[in-house]
Picture 1 (tube, helix red, strand yellow):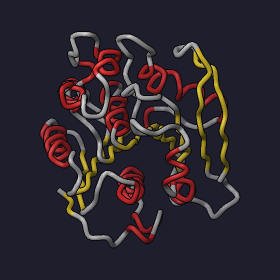
Picture 2 (picture 1 turned 45 degrees about the vertical axis):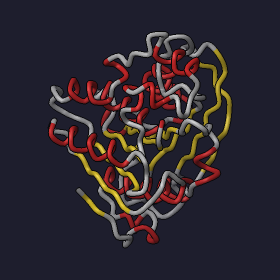
Picture 3 (picture 1 turned 120 degrees about the horizontal axis):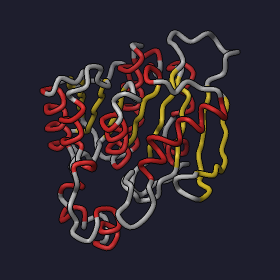
Length: 268
């Protein structure tokens, strides 16, 4: 496993920004699956370092054979903000090409995936559903998948001024910010991205995740939905990352982390 942490200049952001890169190394035992690239997204209260500090992601890149790219987006909700920076275009459009040129990793449609937790789960789904022709799949762990459509609920975690910076002063969630609307539009595409959605049964977002999983499945997306006892925390997200990687690669979860293979869970 090789780890790079650095600063890159983004033309879209018009500034330098942090990105972490984790690469599997070929001198280990040959992987059982082809090499893929995963854009791994942080949550509202986190940054580009949190996945590596709080999860075992570094130990999963080789068995799953994923190149993992972890960018920084502040508290932007992976949006092209009404009053602020175009973080979504940076993540979904600019970043994959930059990483491919720097590290010679695959970012074609068959090999590019997005994943994230909470706000990052929303961002991952947004990437794949906005650009189904660019992303092979998305993984959402405890995703806040419809909260932007309910700005009054957002005020429990963000100030009204922050929300207005994302949505505009009218606090209206446009179709380009709605996962449900994006899914309805992407459903018309012949080759749809594969989706993995997971949420803990004790998580306040469980109903939202169940509803979204049912919606995208009804729209014809190849969707794996899992839930098991868990909260909005790293114990859940680390396990969900393993299981999501297994779904996307066709590996068994115990080939990525044996500890998580036999855990009881509900697959719907």
